[in-house]
Amino acid sequence: MGLGLFRKRRAPAVLQLKGTVAPEAPPLASEIEASAGRHEGLGPSSSLGLQQQQAGSAEIWSGPSKEGLARSWESSKARLPTDGGNDLASVSACCGISECEDGEGAAEVAAARPDCCHRFGIDYLRHPVAAYCQLPTPLRQITALPTPIRSVTVVARPTIEPSGGLQHYRDAVPRRVRHWSPFLAVVDEPGLPADEIAGEGGKYHWVEIPIPPTYRLDVSGLGSYEQYVNQVMGKNQRRNHRVRQQRWAQAGVLALSYEPLAPGDRATVKQLWRLYRQNGQRNGQLVVGRRDFFRIHLASEGLHIMAVRDTSRQGALVCFATGVKCGDSLISTWCGTDYTHPLSRDCSCYVMTQYEFVRHAIADPDVRWLDLGALHRTIKAGSLCAEPHPLSTYLRCKSRWLAQLLSLLAKRWLTLQRLEAAGVIRDV
Image (cartoon, rainbow, N blue to C red; front, side, top):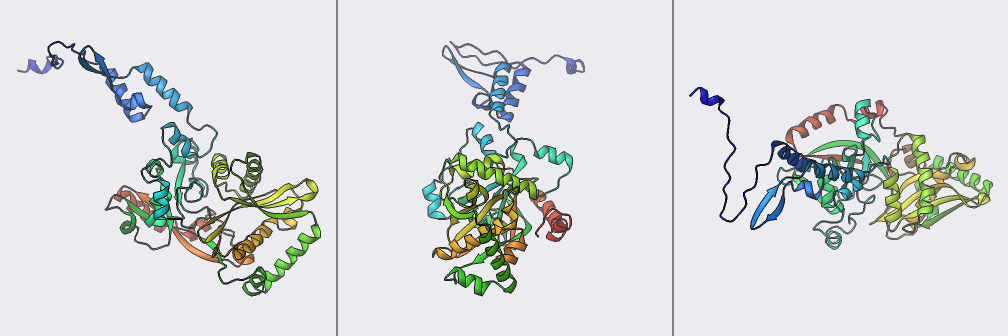
């Protein structure tokens, strides 16, 4: 019996039906390659692993060849983004995924939540992981790779105001995007029982992380812009407002207009991106990458541009801010300034655009809130008299133990006081 332990094992017998051809046992290397193809997701031929073939009257299953795997991998790799943009849509496209291609159509979503209809950049957005964080060098190099892990899908308005919240975040984000996002964060009111609202019976666990407050202005009780200046602004705000208006009039060459942005206007979007990138490099925070910026401004409907132009330079763009209306809110979001222009700072071009946003919000009877976004409280609270709105972001986890670990880290290290002291958040 002892010698039987070293006896060579025979291959398993194959049942052969009458009138059929028996397939040969595949080699071990083919099994390994087929398994690797299933896990790598290299395309339709390799993801299925085995292909069904006909040989006479018998059905024979054979694994993919090594050459076929190599060709599938090269074709898939060629479709991945290579320009450094944090574009999960390109990765999804190479896998045959469309962001609006789920069972819940646009009509059904609009019926469930009228102000949430899967609008990329308006209802949800991808933020780079390292946008607001000073990561160590190894992690920074990992997040720089063109993979979905470099960004987090944030369910919020561009100003970080809640879009769908915990209760309706599925109405704001397509199902495919929710499935392919390794990190999903939902912005909502602080202190909510997230596991009870969106836990789906214990399938997901949520970790609450505090974020800086956003600033918004209630214009529902204002009848005119003059009333806003005389009643809402304080003494110092009115004096600064008067000085800025005088400097603007003395310059005599700057024109301010609220222009609709036509979808597909690539020439204008190129000018906006140049100023937006310059503004991000100056502040150290380029939240939206080039590809996402172009995608939002070229494809989204209802966008407007609050533009400051120099009439002495053939209408050259000096400053801009993107405006979009969502429900009862007018949003002032992505902005940029040409700091090489001599009047960009002397005439306070950015603050003047925000004054004009207040004017348009008051004139629109359907608008109650003017959303100005987070950070830069000196301008938003000090000059525009906007009120802070405390918020929290809820990070989705599938593992209970990971959720508990992140919750401990959030309570100990990810507090607003620590983040501001470390210089990660600069709310000035």
